[in-house]
Image (tube, rainbow, N blue to C red; front, side, top):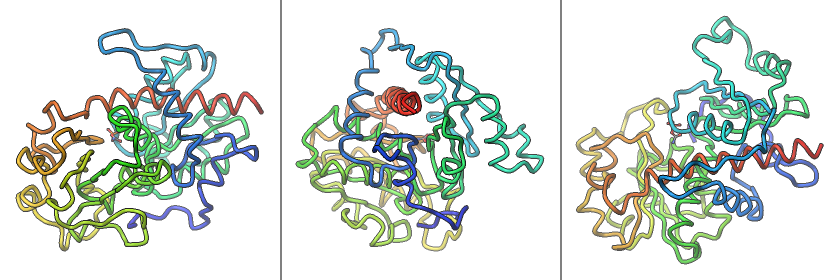
Length: 332
Ligand code: CP
């Protein structure tokens, strides 16, 4: 990984996120999260979905509670869906405008957290470019506070992983017979890592990480996956094809990174290329999309595409996670 390092005192996030009794206190990573907890969250998310066109499901599970969205990196989907998820559960939701917050005046992240704790915030939703930031906050938070990772450097994006896996499960439940191809800038992708860790736990049949060599992960990063540097080989007979954006904000050295036209020609998910996957294959993208670079617009809008379904599932998954950690806090 090429993540920007925040805290050298990193503990395994999987240890930090569980209480001694194994209940989910924070959600920091899918790596090491048990199959039981994964399935519980997926099942709970499913119950928060309503038919297309119907009113969204609401609950009073977080009535009187407060959620703070702290996004120190840009976001549309994750931030909006945590906002809606909290409101649909009855919580007050504070969307801190980081660009006009006192962090711009030099306040430390922990002083920001202590300030919000003093305002009786129960759940902090954190996105940050620094590796280890959500776990650092979780280790320093009061025992009545839960921290949810909403995107951490190139390390982890656990609610995205959950919504991606929920979307795959709606298509097929037999993960052991499924071939998933994640295509693009794997090296800098927290989305790929979280999906990969969750799929490993669920016993995925074959996971292919398909990228140009300059965007490939280290061989020991996700050793259970097959690294592929040729798109045709990566797509052949795949059940699920997920395209990723090139994470330019995380690429320090552009040496070896293909130009846009070369990238699309060799790694873009085009209608022609999709003929290599199974005819029933679904196409996914976590967003934001760059049409004509990692995916052809006609593919993104095709009947095979479940990209907007991923977005819908994102709200449900975030409701499930908020409700789960709130139950842990309530049981203190
Ligand atoms: N997939 C995702 O994290 O999108 P946003 O950056 O818009 O939140």
